[in-house]
Image 1 (cartoon, rainbow, N blue to C red):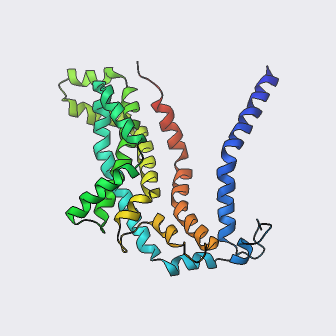
Image 2: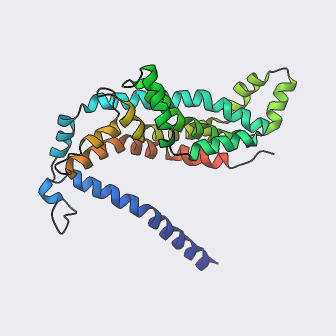
Image 3: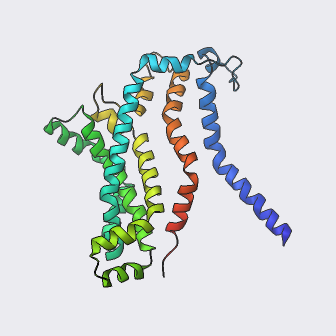
Length: 274
């Protein structure tokens, strides 16, 4: 029995390594590129460990881009899109879960899996007609296409898993449906809201295509800064990797800090109430 358990643990560990190692190796290679000069970055065979680490690539990122302005734009857009998604998505998820509106759930799922690029052309024409292109407003609105379905879909699972007796007791005691939602369902669904907030923020922060098309020179977000490191003459791998690392770092740090909450929230969402 113990041998079987040991073999199972080894198999599980190897599976985790197989799944994680590609992403980890890509991240380490990106870190290596950002710390090497261009000669080492184009050397063959490749130089994996920098012989003389340098921060010049990071300096070039800040010299060639208004990086702090882009960072502020990303913060404004991501926080706004996440906040609005929670404001709209949490009540929507509750309503769909309690009414068992399966058709609405399917619509949300379709909206979730549909590529954001499908919405880009009609939204671009709409914002161009309204004269909003080049501002942060259309970027925030378009990010709702990504964040709202995420929040609704996650919260549906949590609200479906809550014991219905608690809300029924509140309604019997004279509470309205909104009071039952606010005072009973919302506190119990905090783990789900944490997961939805983190995932919505990550997807909004990493989105590239909407800001690339709708933003102006002063309203670009951080992912666009990575694209700005590309030139027609050559690909500067060092500055490009440094910019990608700077964009990735906040999301990576947030995920590492909140990993326990994410796991706990996703686990709680899978437990159905009686």
